[in-house]
Length: 394
Image 1: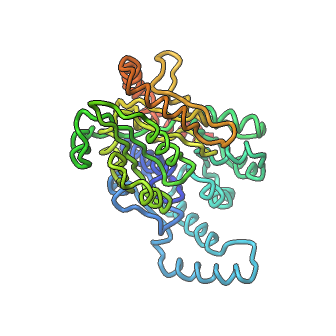
Image 2: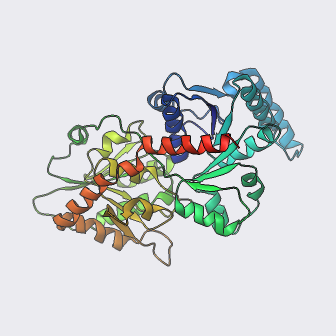
Image 3: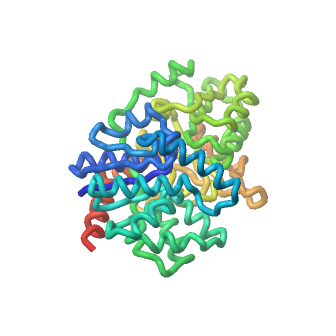
C-alpha cells in the first residue's frame, strides 16, 4: 500500500516520534511510505537519520524553497491586511495535493491537529481514505468543553486513539464520530545500551540509586515537582541518590541555572538518544499535569528498560503502569486538589518506597519487563497495518 503520514514536525515529541517509528515499521513490512512534514523548518536531522530508513520518503515545503519563501512573504502581507486564511497553508495544501497525485497515495494518516486541519480540504476532493491518529489534543479540547473540531474528525474514515482514555473521552463528548480504534503507542528498541556508560559519563557511582525523567521541556510535565520531591528525600547512609533530567528548553535552562549546582541533580539537555540515559536509571519519573497526557512514550520506554515508573494518575497513564493480569509496573500518585499539579509529598513518599522496600521495587521491575510486548513497535505497527487495510477497502 502507498501510505502518506502527515505530521506537525520531525522533532522530539510523542506524536512525532510515533509517526516516524510507524513510517519506518510500515516500510519494513513492504509498504511504500511518504512522510509529509508540515513545519519544514522543524527538523532534528540526527533524530530523523536514527528513526527513518532511506526507503521512507520525506517531503515538505523545503522541497520548494522559492514557493515557500514567497508564500511566507505573502502570508505576512495577508495577515496585515486582515485575511482570515493563511496563504502559506494554501501553499502547503497545494503541495500536499501534488504529492498525493505524484506518489499515487492510497491512504493518508495524520498525527497532529494542525496536520488534520491542513489535510481535510485536500482529501475531501479525493477518494483517498483519511485516518486521524488522536494523541490527546482533541481529548483535551473535548474535556474543556470545546466542540469546534468535530467537523475535522467527521471527515476521517476512522480515528485511531492512542489510549482508551482518549477513545472514551471522545465518544462521550461527540457521539456522531467515525469508528474509533484504540492502538497503544509502541516504541522501538534496537539494542539496549549499557547503563554503566551513562553513570560513568555523569560520574555516578554504580551502587547509587538513580531516578530519571525524560519529557518535553514544558512545565506541565512536572519537572519542578520532580526536583522538589527529590530534595525532600532524607539523606541515606552508604548509598547516594541521584536525579537525571533529560530534555531541553528555555524553561529547563532556567531550572538548570537554579538547581544545576546541586551535586546529585544532573541536567543533560536535549539529546537524540534518551535511551542511553534511561538505561542508567533505576526508576523513571513523569509527574505530569499536562491536560493532553494520553499515553506518554517516556513511561513506555521506562518499562522497556525494566525501570519501574512513578507518575501522576492523569490521562492514560494507568493503562501503561497498571495491568489487570500482571499487576503494577510502578506507582501512580494523584494531583494536588488545590494546585492541580503533582502532589510533591506524595511523589517523594513514592520515591522513598523504592529506596527502602526492595521487594516492592523488584516486583514492579519484573512487571515492567513483562509488559514490554504490549507496547512494542512491532505490535503497534501490525495493528496500524490491519486498520489501514480494513478502511482502505471501504
